[in-house]
Image (tube, rainbow over all chains, first blue to last red; front, side):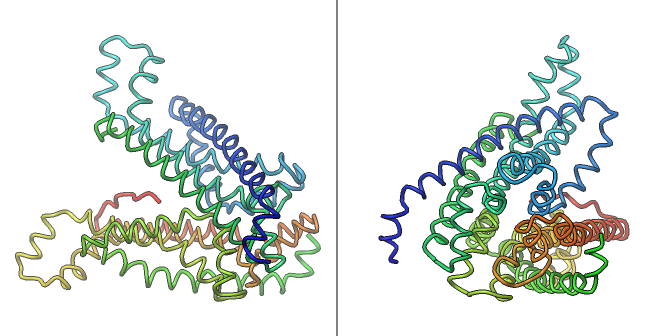
Length: 211
Length: 214
């Protein structure tokens, strides 16, 4: 089948899978970014929770496919089985960079803010978080690229995404779906990366390049 | 558990295959990545091309990368090692570059003042001083490669992915575990061992390694 023929017949499916992929990414990323920042702030503020950081480091080294595979006996195959490991993996870099970014805020800034009578909440939202923003965004970028990539893998546990096309291509040795699936998911990853880099640069310019 | 005991030899063989894939890829990645990183510090014009290029490769989803290997290299060991090598380049190249760029200017000036050539400067000053950052990059590459190596199974190269993917498609958690446990153990061992090595090096050399992100 020529590429033109393939596209004519499966065009609808390709568009549907692309939209699925993007939606799944947006949901997982929004949840991971939010939870990661909240958990990062909690670890920074509540010293007792620091014991979680080494555990986060260990979880980071667990490969995504292993996490997906291990979730099957507990969560089954499908969206729940895919979303929970995605969230766990997506939260980690955001959490690490939030906690680390907040820690690296210059002490003079904090002292000045407390000196002019800011409350703890004001300190967090007006000084600490804006100063740590470039580092937090860098964590979100790592998380975003990883999520776009892992979503292709979830095809293996029955979640429809661009990965479905890649797996079709591999199992049927058909280069059409293989190239379309791989190409589109790669393009999406590059696009997400560029958007995040743009946001990081803007945040950096605002803080004057120093946390 | 019975499955793991009964198939212990086979699992060991598959683990060995996994190590072969990762080991070969890392050898290529380090052998190629360090010179690329050095070139990026020496030739201004090539710097954005090299650093941007390896970053772009790293962004491509893993499954897509392994899929894209098939039209070019077919199935088996060659495409698998190529894919894992490409992914392992970024941390090695990036950290070689960062390590050398962050060598304190006084050290460089002193070396040049002693009349060192550019090659001597590289071997005697820049590389030793960036060793800690460089080994941090290699650690990231090793841990990544062990995980990504599981996908080699999808393009017929074998390795522990064979067990993981068979476990998924036959819904048998024990088979998944038989493949996952060695992967996780190897990744953790590599991370721990290389961190220890970095720490000893830092202490020996009396250096503080600037952490380079991936």
